[in-house]
Amino acid sequence: MSLVRFLEAPQKILTLRKDFFVFTSILHKTLVLTAIDTSTPLPELQEYLRKREWLNPEEKITAIEKPGEGNMNVVLRVVTDKRSFILKQSRPYVQKYPEVKAPVERIAVEKNFYQAVSDNAVNAHIPHILGFDSNENLLLLEDLGHCEDMVSIYQKKTIPAKELNRLIFILGLIHKKNVEDDFPENLEMRRLNHQHIFVLPFVEDNGLNLDDVQPGLQELSIPFKKDAALKSVVDKIGKKYLSPGRTLLHGDYYPGSWMTEADNLYVIDPEFAFAGFAEFDLGVMTAHLIIATGKKGYLNQVYDKYQGEANKKLMGQVAGIEIIRRLIGLAQLPLERDIGEKRKLLKKARKLILG
Image 1 (tube, helix red, strand yellow):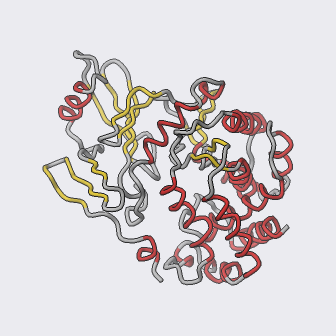
Image 2 (cartoon, rainbow, N blue to C red):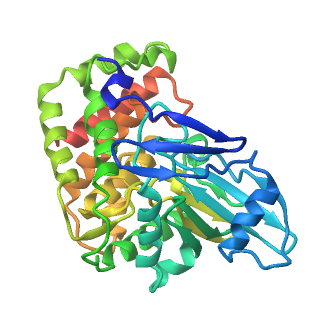
Image 3 (cartoon, rainbow, N blue to C red):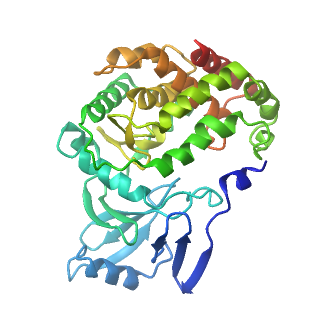
């Protein structure tokens, strides 16, 4: 079974006029009328922002920049003669992988997450919302400056203790937030994520040739795709992931969502947010610390410093699953490790999953 067929074909893109498109989502019955990118004419973007009263009447846009490589959404920095801000827009597919369909409503989930945590100490570690247009699936955010994400820990093979402690503390604050009944279920995004975390990495014929990523990786992956005991545990936790919970989760708490700027630390991109079980965020975080450093001891460190209740075994199982999917799944990391090092990481992951 091919990966594309398994995930269904991407939505058609119909040209409307020069820099504008209509994206029709058959599954979600949603239209994105204006596709904004770096080629959008400044006068047209300026007119749109003024109509929304997001620009002052005399304020002029001077440039549009890409602040970084977005995975899920289009992300732009808009520079005016007065300031700068960030525009994020969702498409009915994953920005980095256009062949993978994704619900455009994810941008509203991000907005809801930022609103939910805006009245506690997390507020100092997230961008502030400046505007939201549900018709255009577009979110206007505070520009946090020229931040850098923390994916460099994969190359450095370490993370500063001060930053790690703050990240654990911030996650604890997020999890303590009461989830309102009207917070989005975000079920379509979870189903998408479920396929990439709990299903596809463990399917033998999933259409992904891992030797294109790194020679020898395909053969290394086979035992994990044939391990019935391993897949049974993964399936059980995958069902838990799709079930409702009462803890507000970021949903993608990994170095690509952690941003630093001078002494400031921010958490961004909560489009996978939902109400679930705390061990999911904790396990994902732990997984990336282990991937970066090769040290399984980070499981105990995160568990001990987390200010909340959690099941350490479940944390470890989620961590093991996340390690496996990041090594032999579609969502590859900027990770320079030889086959021997990846073999050791996969063995650690298996032990975490099976206890």
